[in-house]
Image (tube, rainbow, N blue to C red):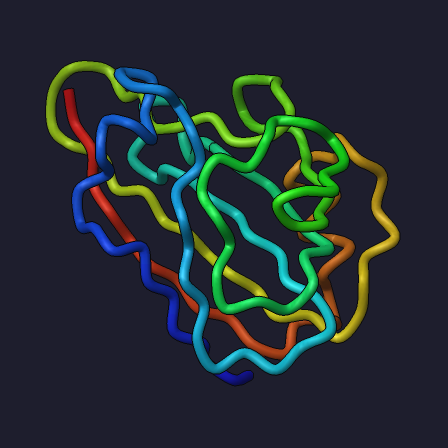
Length: 149
């Protein structure tokens, strides 16, 4: 599997992308990707209840920049085309870091390059997305940032 470079432009998640700020999705830069579509999974493996999923988005046409502030709609037409799933808060779209007070948590922004657009309903779960991606991942990359309160 090919590796792709993923750049967030920060190592500590800025407040604007968390529950302490505007809770908007960050810009994600993706380099060296040759694929039919992209998918992104953002999660926190340090959550007290186990891995917590903050964002599921797929069927993104190949691009070098996933812009910030993607609307929290199941189907997106602008600023990019995409479909979003249900995060661990039970909501559609991006929900930023909001850890309990204490040690900062790690947030992984995983980008997948796929060989097809996925036939997956809007609002699908992480398990649904991971199942749909099986056998279709051409490339993968990730960036990690921390956030604590």
